[in-house]
Length: 119
Image (cartoon, rainbow, N blue to C red; front, side, top):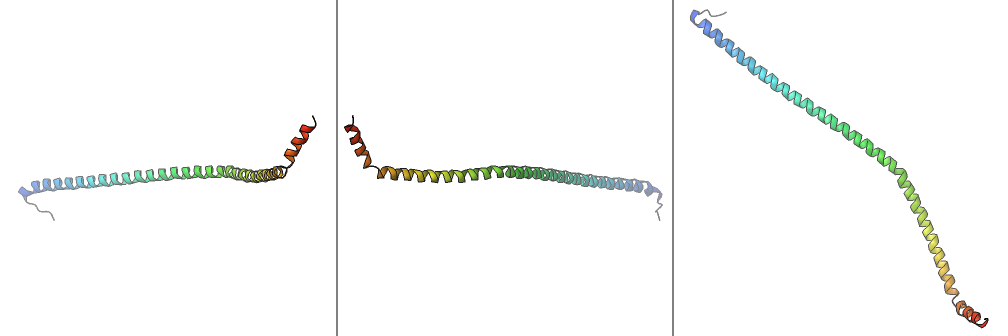
């Protein structure tokens, strides 16, 4: 039921319309704020997703590099084993040679004496 006061009807109606416009403006500001917030959140999620994809690619590259290095590490390990075996064999031969020289020391002076007598 509407009040029909002739003098008040018009100012009340204008005031009511003004309040409705203010409320609609506030609603629009609130909607704009919500849209800005949700837009910022969506952009943040896209950035996070992009970063996760980049990290996945980096880890994939790292896994590939580690796999490629595996063969090199195995070859280096095999070469070290072979070098160690050869060093031990060389050391053994040097010890034999040293023992041979040490046991033949008595022979060196005699051979030099025998060489001098037969000129």
